[in-house]
Image (cartoon, rainbow, N blue to C red):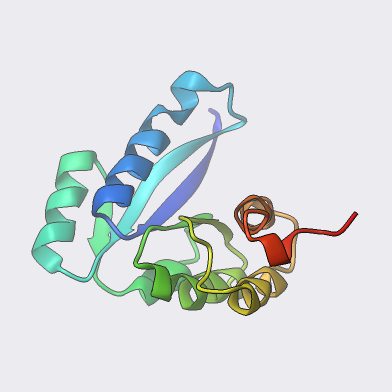
Length: 144
């Protein structure tokens, strides 16, 4: 049986829909070493997130993002929330040892982006994705 990675997605509206589709199609387009599992989807509006859960095939839904971050069965936290919430969620997820995907823009400013990157303590997807996103900020690009 192939290895699986449990995904917890925070945010279910437009970008959540796009990311869900990507998770569902990833192992059809790429030879993955692990299959993503749509474990838990989170949103503030119970009826909306419940509908998204059922419609898109997530295993369960919650209305508090802390539950996703604190869930020991979650391997990857996928953040698709309003921009001003990215940092708090990403830093908490990094402290919980999760791999992180964060929709752009990564942060509201470079200082906030640096705090987010500094919270990552191991080289996982979060470091890769943060680097890709932060590279679009001129003052965050490496010199040379």
